[in-house]
Length: 167
Image (cartoon, rainbow, N blue to C red):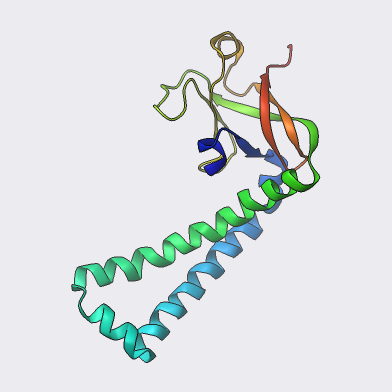
């Protein structure tokens, strides 16, 4: 997500997503359980933490105790899905081309990602290709291929060029 903000769009490969989905879900569950243990341990045994949290309303406490672990779980999931292949692409990357499947090439673009193509079988934050030229979008159909070319590995690519294979 940050790479896209700084002008270096990155996508993990569909093969990597399929192979590591289970591991990423386990990392998310482990992160959630660990954060719950930390929150409740600090709540029960750490007096300075109790004094600081004591000033919170019950609503704020419930928000922290419910959404805190969920956010930490999402971080655990995206650590496996995004950070690992991104680090591999940075360290051991070479010029590669990876194939993805188009879900929608006509979707309305938002202000952060114009004109965009939505990809199938990709997790949230990694399901869009931004700045796709209109002449390429016209050639794309749902279920059809799109090729991203750039620096990376078989697990992910910092794409610089976008192509559509000839049918």
